[in-house]
Image (cartoon, rainbow, N blue to C red; front, top):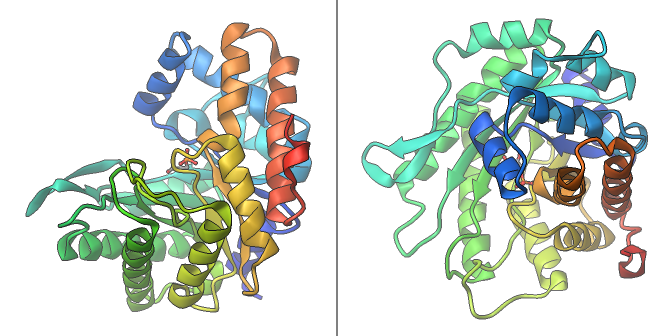
Length: 334
Ligand code: 13P
């Protein structure tokens, strides 16, 4: 077993998943302002350290993805990576610098951040990071994703993953096919399959050790504006079919993004995926909104109420962990 494979398994095994707390300052500001909290450095840290010191971290969270600001912050004389390590989880870091308009197809996005990445990775490793994240985004329409967007984003993910492994960290490879649009789940399945296959083609070309990678995909869903909605059973079936056909066997695990699903939807769908998972891949969560939404809402009403906020977070993290083992049921939702 390679060291990278050990790290990857450590993060996602035994009903553990990933807390994606790597919102850029711009995104975090949107999230905080939506609940009428001022977005300043202190408040961003206050909310995040409340989550990182929760009881459920020990049992449910194997890794936390941080943003550049947070990995450099301290709380009670401990660095945030030290705080996360204390709970038994590993600190990770988002290393892309965001999705920008793609020259040649300006209505699509290409993720930037390769320039100077090797040097930044070395610094993040020294700060305690043991895994990283890079997100490529794809929209679906009658023309999109274009071949150019599928190719360019996969190319960037391949180069990113190779650089990260060179620095002895596990790359989370996140190709996100967005749920915006009127498309059917069948189209989402086709486009997601194309995108994931292309990513692995590039990872292999870049000699990435696939046993030391975690894939972070979207689930197969209807577009948000689609008239016909598939049910959770069909979501699980299409998602599993797509991943079995597109992901090389060596990959140890898959940690889904929630992508705008509600907390309960994301939990229920993950549970069904695990109940019917006949592949050897571990299937777990790497949720941002679907782990934080309720906790953020509670916290925003009284930002001094850490224990109440932690209760809400612990409940959601426990339910997600049950779903990662196929042991969740609707009557556990209060
Ligand atoms: P969501 O679960 O809110 O989609 O966030 C996950 C993530 O890390 C997006 O890059």
